[in-house]
Image (tube, rainbow, N blue to C red; front, side):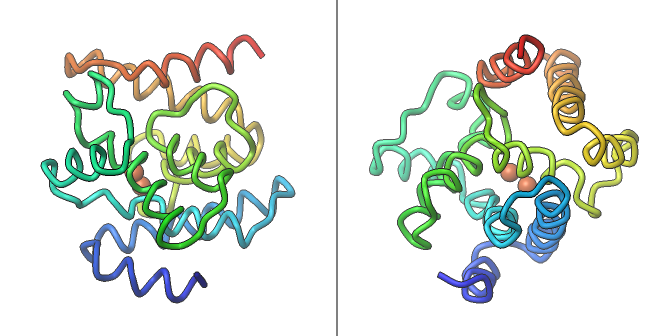
Length: 185
Ligand SMILES: [Fe+2]
Ligand SMILES: [Fe+2]
């Protein structure tokens, strides 16, 4: 499916705010892709569609995962917001015909993971530094992402882990694996 058609589908599934976020991530993924010699058209598509399942109600997410054989681990069951990544990847594969590499990037965009390829890295960081993001460290990470992509991801993973600790939330194992993988490679 073409970019404009996907935009039309997203408009039916996302609030105005989330749709705007998706456009911001799309733009940032394109910039990062051009900077790091990755196909910008592919990066735009994953950036645009990455949160397609974000506003699906929790019970629907669980139902979708069960019906489509998407494994749910205990942390995802406890923090069901996390599930939108895997479900979004599945929807993009089935509805838009996205490739495995594109779906992997969408699947890992919230937690990160081991063996992230360039597209996965670009979407992971692009999601956190789109121009809609205004948290304290956003400008710093935005700048870092264009200088040292891996360091920017590590920084973002550390922020995520710190937030989980502060709020006493479980940490997804993929986030820990991603951090270890980046530190040891
Ligand atoms: Fe997301
Ligand atoms: Fe997002």
